[in-house]
Structures are given as structure tokens and as C-alpha cells.
Image (cartoon, rainbow, N blue to C red; front, side):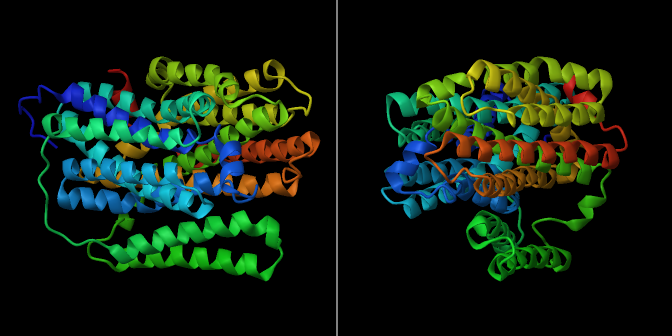
Length: 474
């Protein structure tokens, strides 16, 4: 963090543009593939159960490697890791776009996720370096940074529709390459230099947490095929849990761990991260299955499907930037987190009543707008609480933890709701009724997750946090 009184960087707002773009792009890459999934399924031969791995391969690598990315950023300098992450993202995008087999596609998506895991923590470290000594500017910077994440997620749905309709599904990956090249050219001139420091990297910890997450998601995804009561399902799930337990044990014993366990004693850290995890576990399945409902049941094309969700994109961006900061300043973070998660649950519940012969105006639009309002209300205060309650010296670690929570929630939530949808009929691709039954079950399950998140927030987030100071300036 810059020293107090140090002259501000004259290019700090240009740098903030690149930082916000990074947040926008790494989250957009989780959603831009949504509209393209049916075409990818046909072209690459994915089964309905395995199709979700186009999403999960990205978020498992992203979420599992975020703590490692934060550690590498501290050791080698945020500016260097920021640039390295964009180069890795471009390589992964090229592999994913050129894939002609399903396994190659998944490799490309995992490489994309690894690149994003380097970009995200380095971007936040650079933001704090540029604005940390000036609280009023820091508030504006964090508001724009926070809004970039859900904006990227929802905007990706529309862009995916445009690209799939007028180009081809491969271009949902190729679009990253010119953006990455532009950022790589701009980074040396606008990003502040960051001093590297000596230390070790907990490679074994990074391996165990990533493997534990991947194995756990795999167990949930394959459960509909093998049966929830089968020994193999529970053995694989137990292996995932044991790997995650091994990661925690390693962190307790390491002198320089990826995640210092003592940080969890910070007030509200656990509650804010649990809210982020359950929010993602509800939100990501919503857009995943809503895209499939629009295309496979209502019969919309790729462009029309993306355009159908544009009102939701506009609503969430407007509320995130304009309304949410004012409401946080007036009521504090906890009421907004709880209200937002309840509204998200209400939108999912509404979507669960979608009909096989339904329409966009009746079955999708009002419910999706309610869900978007809930996401907009809950996201910034839960993110801000998770980032601002930690010791300032551990801001990078707090960022890595909350980003990991969101990505773990995304992966496990989608895996669980994919299993729910398959169990209730979505595998019968020739039947709109069966498809709708499966999608409705997934929406209902996602509503339950959001409701649990609201209840957990009531019980675990107890004291005010300094989020108000970070949002009133915006």
C-alpha cells in the first residue's frame, strides 16, 4: 500500500479501468458459454450430465488456484502476475476455441481458469496499491470493481448469444485473445511496480485444495448416473472431503501457508463468505438452466436467448452502481445481504413455475428481474464485508478467500442442481415437459440455497462493518 502523502499516480484511473476490465472478463468467462452450450454439446459430443463441466472445468481451476495466485502475487509482484495471468488466459482461450473433442475443450477451460486465478488477486492488490492511501478514492474504486463482477456475469449471457448467432461458438473463447493482447500492451505503462518479497510457495496446499474441489464436484455430477446410494458415489465424495481436510491440516502446520487459519477469527469473515458461497450456488444454476429453458423449451435461437436476458443485465448493472451503495450507506450491509438473498430466492421460486408451453414475458422476465434485484442488493455488501473486516495487511488473503468462496459455490451449486435436474427428467431431451420438470426442480433447489444463505446471514453477520465508508464516496 502506498505511504500516506505519497503523490498519486497520474494514470491510476486508467489503471483502474484495466483492473475493472480484468474483473469483468474473468467473471464473464463463467457465463459467456451459457448460450453456446447447446451448440457445443452437438459439436463436441457432450452428454447432458457432462455438459456442466464446460463451466465447472473453469470455475474449479479458478476457485482452487485463487489462494495460490494471491501467494504468487505477493512473492513475485502483482504487476508481473497480472500480465502472466492474461497470457495464460489467452492460451487457454485458444485451446478451448480450437477444440474438436470434449476433453480438449475441458483442458482449455481449465487453463482459462488458471489464468483467471492469477489475474483476480493481482488485480485487487494493484487496486489497493493505487488507491489504498486515499480512502475517498478507494471507495469509488471498490464500488466500480465490485460492480464489474456481476455485470460481467450477466453481460456475458447477452454477448454469448450475439457471438453464437452471428459468428460461431468458438468465438466465445477467441474474444478473450485480442482483449488479453491489449491489456498486455497497456500494463507496463499504467500499472504500478510492486516489490517482490522472499518466501516459499505451498505447492502441496495448492494441489490438495484444487484436487479436493475437483473430486467433490465430480462426485456430485456423476451421482445421477451411479446413484446417490451407490458405494462409488460416497467413496469419491469422501475422497474429496479428505483432500480438503488435508489442505486445512497443512495450513495449520505450514510456516507460510496459502491461507492463515487465524484470519477466520476476524468478525463477520465466515458469515460474509458463506453468503457469497450460497449466493453463487443459487445464481449460477439460474442463468445456466434459464438459457437451456429459453432455447430447448421455448425454442429461441442463440441471439434471441441472449437478448431475452438483456433486461436482467441492465437491471443488475444499474442497481449495483447506483442503488446498492446508497442503500448500504443508509441501512448497513446486513439488511441488504438478507433482503437480497430473499429476493434472489423469490426469483428462483417464481422461475420454478415455468411451463413447457410458456412465454418469455410471463415465465421468465418478471422472475429474472426479481432475481437480478436480489443479486444486486446482496453482492456488494457481502463482498465489502469480506474485504474490509480483515487486518489491512491481509487484504490480499481476504480477497483470495472471498473469490474462492464464490467460485466454490458456483461449481458445487451447479453440480448439485445439474444432478437435481437430471433426476427429475431433464435428460429426456426430446420432451419439453420432461425438460421443464428438470429445470423447475433445479430452480427450486437454487431457491432453497438462497433462502439458506439469507438465514445464515441473519445468524452469522452480527456487527456493523466499515462497508458504509467504502460506498458513500461512490
